[in-house]
Image 1 (cartoon, helix red, strand yellow):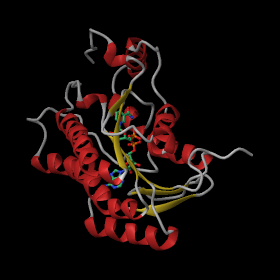
Image 2 (image 1 turned 90 degrees about the horizontal axis):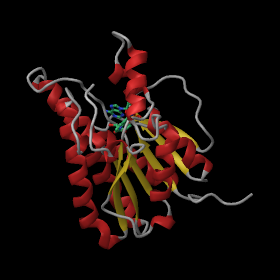
Image 3 (image 1 turned 90 degrees about the vertical axis):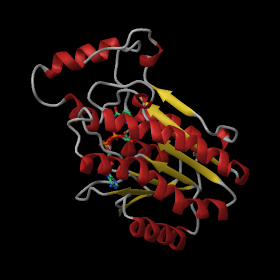
Image 4 (image 1 turned 135 degrees about the vertical axis):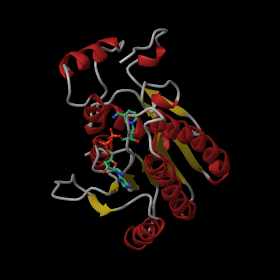
Length: 254
Ligand SMILES: NC(=O)c1ccc[n+]([C@@H]2O[C@H](COP(=O)([O-])OP(=O)(O)OC[C@H]3O[C@@H](n4cnc5c(N)ncnc54)[C@H](O)[C@@H]3O)[C@@H](O)[C@H]2O)c1
């Protein structure tokens, strides 16, 4: 059997039980990595080979520190960090409470900061590594009633570039994936459950040049490449993966 491109690597995937996170865990497992799927959500789940689950709240500094210590002692190293954990709220700023604003920043931005901060010493010890953050096409172009979410994704884009500048000299590469519409629980909740959802989904699908939504597997392909040694010169970039959606002159109004 031929070796996978992540053979021997150890990876943590936050939000590892979510739509995209799980797709990445599956792909990494197929590529030969050992994976820690870390998530706040618990309960019965069947995990792919070489993927284990760890309970993690990315906003809890002690929880993050303890998990990194556990990875260091149980796996002996860490090569890859994937920060997918996030939430979305669909509101204008007037309808967003300060508590909701602080909460989405705590998960989407502070969570990425904390996990990266405590993972970097392990990557450094190992001679380098790769961090992939999750931005969004919404960090470039706003959708209506997604203000706080858009703001968190813009912050992730800037943080990614800043981290890449700081840690490139230590062979730590930092990139962000900026997905468009990917078929996951987050997208289902974005479409909601009121009105003619199927027509809306069809309308949105058809506005994509590729005439489909993305899948977690589409995202996992790029994450896998960025995390492997073949991407050794790729750092500090915002990788938009949206089926051509943002290449168009006219954006949709939902
Ligand atoms: N699905 C899309 O269309 C889309 C588009 C653009 C960007 N993204 C981004 O991709 C990433 C993954 O999105 P998804 O669609 O898989 O979402 P998802 O809702 O399916 O999964 C998110 C996961 O994050 C976990 N999580 C939430 N709060 C957490 C916390 N405090 N600590 C640890 N885990 C926590 C959830 O339990 C869930 O498993 C997110 O960063 C999202 O913003 C998604």
